[in-house]
Image 1 (cartoon, one colour):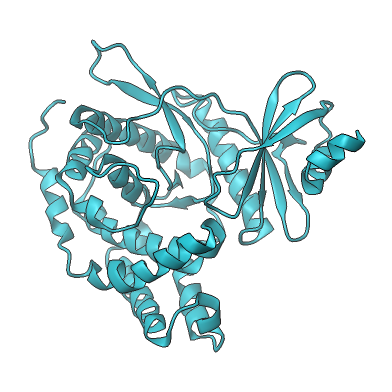
Image 2 (image 1 turned 180 degrees about the vertical axis):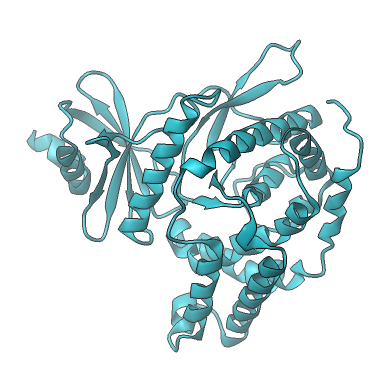
Length: 360
């Protein structure tokens, strides 16, 4: 046991003891992605099972707990559907998902989700169409379930109001690590976002639980026999750092990245370009065929992208990315992505509402 204490981080050991699980930890392997500041471990147990432990210091423990409470409920509701085994569930104590508060850090344990196949780095068109239908079906089912899931205490509107307050603070240059001119860009973009979502009717849009980060390393698919219309279905999903309960359009930026002609990259940027590719419109046409979109929905995609950059790159990026990555992404966001955003014509997306669907 003395040797084990040297291997297992103290907070993980304390959290496991607090859970009250009868199993003992035999060994631990760090499986962190080494992009964010979270630490992720696979615990090998004495009964030959395994458990995933995530140690986080991002935001508030109480919002961390709230998010996992909602994810746990969402997973229970999905258990009555074809997506019953999609999400990795958290371990529970006293019929509630268990989270551990350790002061500056907190812990949640997940069942080790099974993994099937992965999509290729660049998707052929039939896979893009398939992905559109599959995400559409998943969103449609989540729309049906969402009235039974309580909202969270934060929203994209409250996040942007808070960001505006942070920028006005006299310590803002030190906090964001950018010069005054770029702070003005943040302020202007927050204002633009809040005015635009108000005009689009954000307050009245239906909300669903979302897992924004659909990069290829966060989900697996099950490939189907070749004689079927669909080539694959969603099989498992993990990594809940960017969980929200919001309009479904927030999922679309990462869907556009998966659909992009550039494909998944090790060195990445967050340009809006994938949203305007014909390949993304192919995704949208097939999504729309199973989960209807409106003109307002498609115009909201631009604001969903603006929110992603302002919140997950500018406001919270230091928690999600290593220092060298976030310093580059912040400058790109404030000097390239955001200043050029309003010169782009997102009305080209509206064509998907009228174009005939061609099977792929």
